Each structure stands twice: as C-alpha cells, then as structure tokens.
Amino acid sequence: MKPASRSFKENAVKALHDDGLQQALGKVRYGFVANRAKARANLPEFETLRDQARAIKEHTLAHLDVYLEEYEKKVVESGGHVHWAPSAADARDIILRLCQDAGAHTVTKGKSMVGEEIGINDHLEAAGIKAVETDLGEYLIQIRHEPPSHIIAPAIHLTKAQVEADFRDRHKDLPQDRILEEPAQLVAEARAVLREQFLAADVGITGANLLIAETGTSVIVTNEGNGDLTQCLPRMHIVIASIEKAVPTLEDACTILRVLARSATGQEFATYNTFSTGPKRPEDPDGPEEYHVVLLDNGRTEMLGGEFHDMLRCIRCGACMNHCPVYGAVGGHAYGWVYPGPMGSVLTPSLIGIDEAGHLPNASTFCGRCESVCPMRIPLPKMMRHWREREFEKGNMPAGFRLGLKLWAFAARRPRLYQTLMGLGMPVMAKLASKKRRFAWLPLAGGWTRHRDLPAPQGKTFQTLWREQNGRQ
Image (cartoon, rainbow, N blue to C red; front, side, top):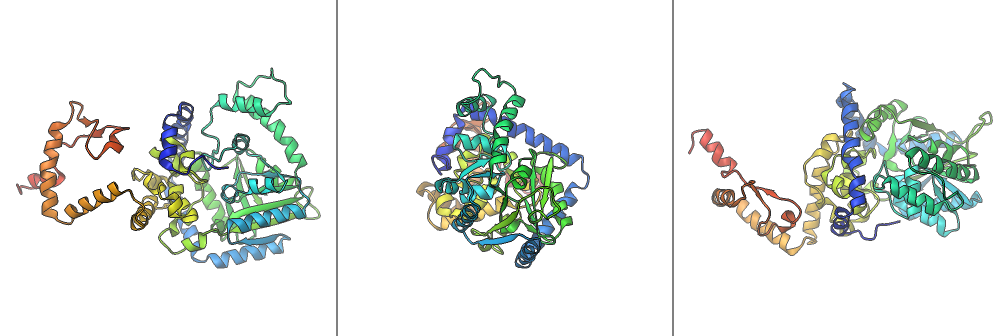
C-alpha cells in the first residue's frame, strides 16, 4: 500500500487543503507534545537516561556483528530459528516460505514498521494467504488500503466519523442500526471482529522493538495486547526485525524502554512490554510450537560508520515527528513512503535512494526540535544537510535554486561585499515592510510568501549593531 505519489510537494499541497486531516492532526500538535513534556518533568533522571540509552546503542553498533551472532546462538539454544535477510525481497520470500510450510491460510500481524518496509502483506495476499493487521490503527488503515501516517499511531490522520463510516462499509454482517458514536463502541466492534481472526490464525507475525543478545529474546511494546495474542495463539510465531534492534543485555533493554514510552506517548511504560524467548516448552500451557526470527539488513550495513550511522540508534518512538512543525502541518502520507517526519527524511533516502526521496531532506525548517526531543540524541538536522549536499552534487536541485545558491555563495565568500549588500538591503526592506512589519510578497521568495508572511528585518544587521554597541562605528 503506497500513497498516490512520492512527491512531497504534491502530497503536501493536498494535505494542506484536507480539512479532515487538519482536524485530526491537532491530536499530534497538542496531545503527544504535552504528554511527553509532563513525563519528562516527572522523571528527574530523564536526561541521564537519554545519555545512557545513546551509549548502549553506540556500543552495540560498534560491535554489532558480535551481538547478532550471540543473539542467533541464544535463539537456537532456546529452540528457535534465525533467518538472515540481506534485502526486503529476501525477507518476503523467507516469511512466505515459512507460512507455506506451516500450511497457513490466515496470518495475524502485530504492528511492524519493518513489515511495512518490506511490503509483506501484499506479498502474502498475492500467494493466497490472508494477512490481518490486529493493532487497531493498522487494522483501520488496512481496510482503507492506506499506509501508516505515523510510526506509533498509524491511523492518527483519521477522524471518528471516518472510522465509523469505514466500519459500516466493511462489517456488512453486523446490524446497520448499531450505535457507533463513541470511541469505546468502535473499539468494542473491532475487538469482536479481530478476536475471530486471532483464533483462526495459523501464523502470527510481529515486529520487535529490541532484540536481547544475552538471552535471545525479542521485545514488543504495545498498548492493546494484540501483540501477545498474535504470537501466543498461532502454531508459529515469526519475528521480523532489522539488525540494529539488537542490544547486549536485559538491563540495557530496560534502560531504553524507560525513555521509549515517555518519548512516544508520555507514558511511564507501555501497557504491554512482552519478552519472548523461543517456542513454548513442554510445561508451558500456551505459546507457539515454532519460533522464527527474520533479521533484515536492507541497507543498514552500508549506514554503519558513515554519515548516516547515527540514524541506526533510532528506537521508533515518533517524538521527532510529534514535535515537527512540517509533519504537524501535512501529516505522514505527504512523505510518500513508510517512514515519515524528520526520521523518515533521513532514513528513507538511505533505504530507497536519494533519487527517489531527495525531496524529503528539504521538508524541514531546521528548527532543531526533532534533535532536542530525540531520546537517542540523533542529530537529524545535520544528516538532512548531508542529504541536501548529496542531492546538490547530483544536480537534482531546480535550476533556479542552484543559481540562487551560487549567487549567495559568491557574496558570502567576499565578506566586504556581503556586509555592504546586507547593510544596504536591510534598511530598504525595513522601510518597504507593511505596518504589521511583515511581507506578504517578495521577489524570488514566492514559494515562502504564498503560504506565510515573512517577518521584516529591524533595519540594521547584527554586525552593524555589534559594532555600534562596542564603540566601533
């Protein structure tokens, strides 16, 4: 499932004129942001935990081969199996083969961004295997044939009225006169429908927030309990995870979990933090008979040690997009692929190439809020600048933009010329500004002023003010 276009500009224009979307995005602008701020204030050691979590991931990435081999060893010792997938196609084929070997007709899935990345649902459906998303948000977008618009709240772009309409259209066997006015009623209906799928499933597929090398354990974090039903009821449990999800020890995992929920939703901990180690033992009352882990690379190895190495610390909390003014204005579908917001603006070009996703690093104001709230202290603006540099070097920038940069660079490399031009231009712009001290139109700045006003300069440059204040007029 993909948006109609991968063009950010085209998608953003549509999003800005979508009244329903703009109403729904208010939940991002206020709810998540306020909840994170409250959670941070209530935990004095939050900044220390961020430093510790960052150090854990950096240590793991520096020795990733060691910890992945240790993880595989422990999974095998517990009775499970590990499958290595260099590419998305490899991962799809491995999962399909496992499902076919299990004679699966129905597969239930927990929310997994890696599953979205490899397009596993469409692959299974093409082979005649029914794939059912069990996370409520994922279920909503699945029945709408849409990709997720947020990495922790995939259906946050929908309103209650839209959900009701979709349920009435999809659940034809239920009474048409049933009342679906409150969220609780919508949740109850989804629970009843999905419970039948849980019981019918032959295979359950989940993602993994973390992989613990010390014990061979996969960890999922949910608020609905669907992940537990997905992995415990079917005969086979398949975990799909990218290689950077590894951490050394159980203690390390718990440190990261303490910043994950607070950064994502403002909770101290998610409702369900499920640790799974292998298939069920003879004495276990329930659990899968088979346990498989598919470890996906899909470009991560190439990122190690390079300009985009820091992106591998990401724990998919969504804090960067919750605080991003661009995401808050246009939502996730505008980004055109699986990963939206600032983290997607860095990760997506790494995974599908700058030619396909070169527009995303430019979808940023560089305000720095994403980096300031990231629990892993990922320098997202710096990496977006690296992508902009690569895009410029490839000649993908519009001719007008390239000309403007060349003119600016010509002046900037000549300090006296630059200071003279700024000294003349700022007072002139200050006098030409409206009474509100803002510009509604400027030559060569139509892309900006078409959607927002530009504040007028105060009349003097910083350097002029500095010389005046220091007696160097």
